[in-house]
Length: 329
Image (cartoon, rainbow, N blue to C red):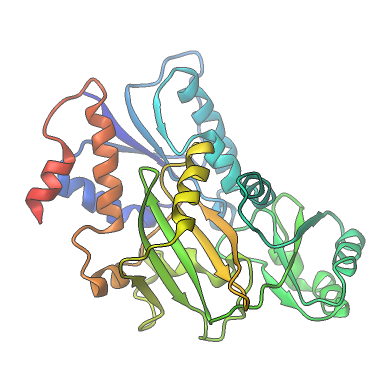
């Protein structure tokens, strides 16, 4: 029997998805890819494979999990297996500079960005931006780790010479320097997509001591994590009947980059210009926000249903998960 197999390195993030699989009666496995062997001389099993590898895996002690997952995805794709969030999606997940390039090719506005390796070159890059302020962030980070707003070059120098930079240094050695986008209102918007189609938008309030920036310093990944407990009241709000031309452009971007399940974040500056600053292919959902909005189908239920529909196209046949989900409402 074909199954859904989830590729990941953080068991806690899978709890809502496990519950959704159980609700829909979908057969599934999990491959915990912190270390292991790829049997490249054998064919992989049949089924649907959902890549949920995270750029922040090294912060949980799983330094080479993305590299192992890349090898597994290469193996699966070489045998024509159905992969949701392909190796291209993984490449963008762990490379924010690659995200900037891909978004730019799609005609989407991003914050001005340069990359640097080494203290002197990082300071030189920031100096080339002009008077500041600047955002300094790791090319491969996750959870907002190492993302900071600086107003003066000596602040950056002090940070790079201090213990903070040693602890938060990018795992690939690449620092990104970006323009600070001064927001029109104190929030960012995160658009969620399942099956390559817009699901809903979440407004994330950033007034709670957060310096808004074109980065993942807003800790949306942490705040959406079901393992971290409930969010602060009203911090996350699902926007009812969100309609904006940007969602169609995001759908085209996802299709062009082998991404089917993702959260994409944007910020509007004081003139109303939208800047897209993060593509998260390992998206989580805020259960409290979904409950407050009274959604008939949660994000993880939608993910499970989509994966089930893809499984139904494989050798295994049975009741479609969309039918089962509708019957459960």
